[in-house]
Length: 211
Image (tube, rainbow, N blue to C red; front, side):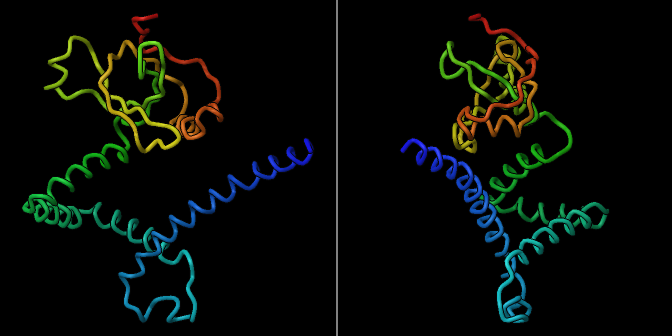
């Protein structure tokens, strides 16, 4: 009986990651394949070949993103972007949504800045506990002027879903910077501590007052 249980668990360890990986990739590809709807029905794969070809829409989406990047790097493309943003700026609700998302995406995908590039330990949810957090930025001037010490803005993700979490301002000297990558930290969070990052010597930004 113990042997059967051992074999069953071993099989689960093989199949569960594989099935979840295939499921996630299938969901992503299916979503990106929706871009085919932008093309005339006559040029869809099932019209040309008599059957659907998964991934064609994904290639189309990637191609459109790449082409957009190429076009907008020249003067004409930049003028078109400014014109389009000017149109959106005249629509009240759309303006708020668009510029909020744009600021976040510019911060995350730009080559500069520290947003989500440093992994920290912070005191949460109480002074005797530590949580993994990501450095997002420094507080705005209007906020930092009200604080009595140097603070940093951090995002504390929840496990096992790191897309949800909490946003806090914490004292910089009460944080510990970890010398691990964001990818390793995300794996650590998703696995709820089962898959630890490669152990390295942490770089102390500051020591907690309670130590």
